[in-house]
Image (cartoon, rainbow, N blue to C red; front, top):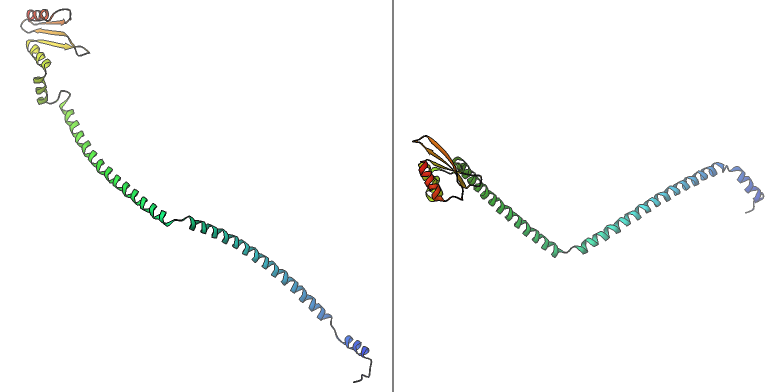
Length: 198
């Protein structure tokens, strides 16, 4: 088909009739939005990749710890340790029970000893009358002292317990003589002296 006018003129007139400036501005805005969206998308992808790497490291660490724990765990050793601990627990419980029984026995013994102590304190140093009488019957020194005392002679012990002084009382004459007994004189001498004084 033949055109009445030159095609270049027609194209030029056609281009002149179109207003493409608003379309260029819109396309520029769209390109800027696309660029902004691409940057935001890249940033989110980087953050997700970093989080994924961190989680992967944690997973590897936990997996290695788990494998070490599983490899180090021995069910036979665990069972034997439980049995051993149970045995120790029963031994400790039995020892505690035995100690409690022994403590009760010792408390009873202590109460008995306290009662005996009170009884002895009431009796005094020389004991009760029956004990003193039995001791006096068995002890020759006490028998001798009783005989001397019945005659009016009191033997006085010194700090060491030796009888080295005698007090002679003559109730008929009202006299009192104190005699120091010296081992260089014989017993016969002192016996005669005591009889003469009495």
